[in-house]
Image (cartoon, rainbow, N blue to C red; front, top):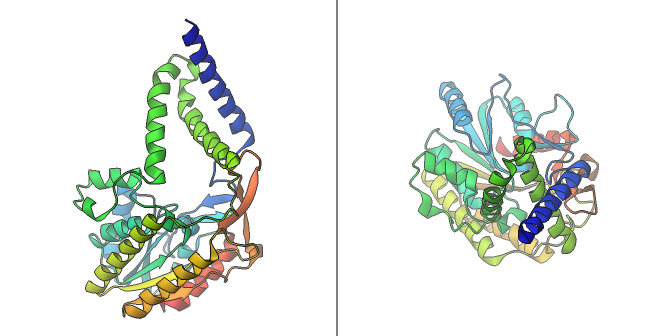
Length: 344
């Protein structure tokens, strides 16, 4: 009986902590940014965020009736998120499709996308549409991740896509670990929570538990947005191989590939080892020089610091933190204009 009481106290304490955390914090990655899908000048949705069979079929259907050549953009949350969003503002792919009406644009984005996932999305779209140009930002920070996240794996399985050998499926990525932890917690909490009238809020409690653990980790290890992140060599190499494979496939299909180094705020030191970051940029230069179908531009300094913003705190000490990834509407306008010149 004593053990049961102890377990009950622990569980109730966790729930209380999560509830308090929910009252005073916001989920990491939310904060001052808002996800906004892209629509073209005809009002048609041209943007798939995460993976969705329904949305993909809708976009493919619209693309099939278009007589314009198609530019496919594969990116991360910088594409879909607007910092300090105001009603009516649009992301840079939407703006680009309005500036350049001679092409049909499609965007496919995943937060923190790694290059193995970029390759997966390229293969997925290539099976369904005729691609004329590829537009891909290469984020140095995202090369720390490998493998396909579980939402992509489930999508892959449902579509009987027999290409798993081309990707790292060892389930050791952040996304897979996060998902496995979620499953373990869910199994232990589901039956217990179902005995209470507030069972319907189970998912919110679970979500806040993840947020709290994430923030506790960052607090204990003093991890901040400005903390220097060293590259993980095995992940780094897997991502480069995925990019090289994508370029090889695009060359075989006569698809022009436009790579760019994305904007990053320049009013503070970026959270990178600068030697590693410079080597990364040099490697992209070499890839462009050695492949006739690949073009490269560096846009890292095009968005002035005043057009960036803050994001929700990722530790227990700060409600808001500096955001290196997401800029305001003005930044989306600047990037859209530069990309229009780059692609045309």
